[in-house]
Structures are given as structure tokens and as C-alpha cells.
Length: 52
Image (cartoon, one colour):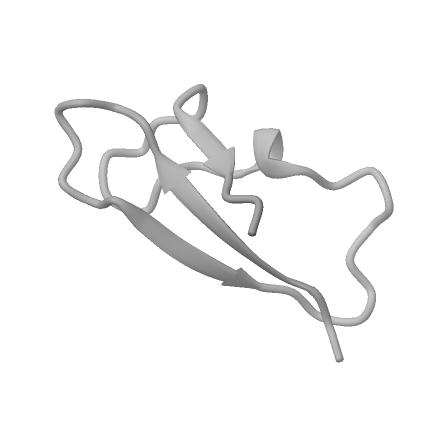
């Protein structure tokens, strides 16, 4: 099964608390959360992977 990550936005002015990112099987090995932007506020330095 392709990887899935739960990601939270830590920007205090953003109203999204977390979202899931579903990947395909061919996601590059060097891809990480720093390559993403929050889907609500557009922030890039405010995203963190939620470790369960």
C-alpha cells in the first residue's frame, strides 16, 4: 500500500489542524514535508508530520 502521512499546520492564524497526504507508489525517496504547502493558508514552514 502506498504511504500516507498525517500532517499538522502549526500556524496560529490557520484554522486547519491536520490533513492526510496520500502518495502513489512512485514517491521519490528524498520527498518530505518541506516539499509541501498547507492547503488552507499556503504556509510551508509551519507543517509537521504527526507521528503516531
